[in-house]
View (tube, rainbow, N blue to C red):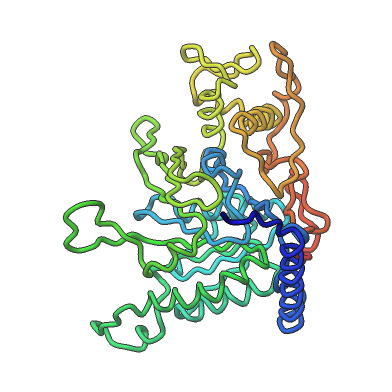
Length: 407
């Protein structure tokens, strides 16, 4: 019969010896690689909360589960031609700029429409734009911007247009097997750690190609190999699913976005919204749809009501009412975010007080003109400590987006 051991003293000695060995190893690592190279997560906790920048669509922010797109991560947006990829990224730039952020647009396709960007709310005079000659140059510029610790959002449009230098110097018809895939794989290995440290969001726009000989499943694939699929924390598939007509004229597209990959919340959620030509994402229509689904705005027949007060007959009239009454828009938006239990971390939101049930909407609101950035949360700012962050009225920080300390 085996004797029952009481290993209190031996175990304690073994534990002390192990802890001492770990402490010696940690000291050696800190000495060789610098303080902070390794740490105990409980003693020196990392910032576990991911800070976000709104996408420009409230429905997409909710589908992402964190209230926006994550900072310090790689995002891929792909889809067919004319599906709204660039429009969505320009909305992201506009949202970041409203909060004092500095943004860069690497236009590898050489097709950026400056006038359209202005219509979407982008401050083009503050936007950094590069039109590189080759893929290596584009990714080197992106790497230098990330390592500056001064950029909040970088858009690369698009991966398919990142042409390797060897291909440009060759002749038409030359075979360059896997050249672009190797370029993307090498660049992403270099970029990932720097992106996380600087809290820069890097958004890659990508195009769709067809695989040859696929018998089962979707033949669609994206360009640039598989590296971007692995390194991206969020992948969005954006598609045009219908046309929006006014009488006989097509004035926009009904768009569906599917969250194909999400490392920060449950994936595979879908959202639909309108993209209007010349105006971008219809935020008012997006809010009317979401608030109706959540029963925050009541729909009785063709009438929409909020807090017992009718706000419009038909969806278009309800949208027009919200466009003219920003305080009602902000109140409904805050309730929709609360209903879906979404909290935007890194954005200071001053939620308007909830109006009591049955309370009338303010009369003076009918006379109020809607500010250009009425949809921006009040006192919103980027979390990295930008001094004199802009208010919701769209003011700048006075120096065109100064460098700010990055945590």
